[in-house]
Length: 338
Image 1: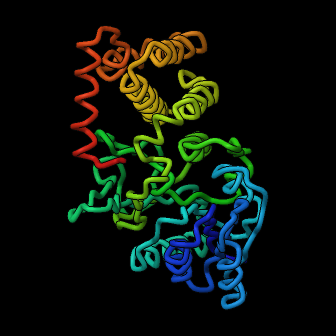
Image 2: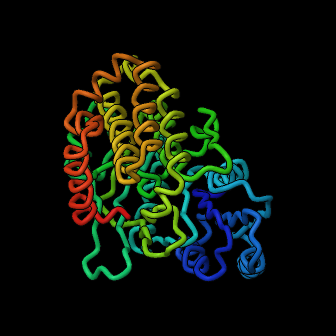
């Protein structure tokens, strides 16, 4: 049995997928690399097969009909035989030294029969044209180089969220909790990292810059123009996250606070983009999103609305909305998130 399965969802990724595959292969025989071809029309499948032929004990290629990123992740998880599971997008890559250290930690957890549910590492925004790369670390939030629980989690700074890039989950936990991402929908990586959290009992943080998150292609889903075009899919993800849990009933206070904060930032992002669109239909969608939260969970609505970001996002006058949009521009310059 492999220690770690790395699923690489690919859709017309022929131009750049080799870097992702090769970075995962640095893990050697401990790693199973699952190249999931999501109905590509270019040479993606052919390239995947070439790696499978060269590394038959490490690489598997799965060809499927197009179903979107979430569908490809679901397929990778279903096929995964490793004890742990990592998603690596086809235009991103892993830093070898950090990856080998993460594997060493996972190996030790297994050897010591420790039930580690989630390993966290830093990620880096590899933004085109930026000489200084933005690193997201968790030093203020997590103890370093040891097991811990939610009771020991500290303060998360602005922009310091647990994303798909930063986590490696225990495969059995993901399968047993019933994680299944929506098909034909962008931005489901938020569900991937959010839904399993109440099932996570033990964590381990390595202060290493493992995941290199590439930003710069015009066709990327996180490109601001594309996010605004696909705002309805972002709203769909928001609503699914609202319906997922009654956060007021999450017993662990620190987990409850974190999940509430994460849901709040998701609401904020959607609201800001709807403000930037600036038409009556978008304003109605923004109001409907907040009304949806209020209808589903009035207590949670009050809690998120009472925050600075929540209050700002519900501003209806033009002057207030211009201030919010300007704040978004400043935040983007600092955190470089798209």
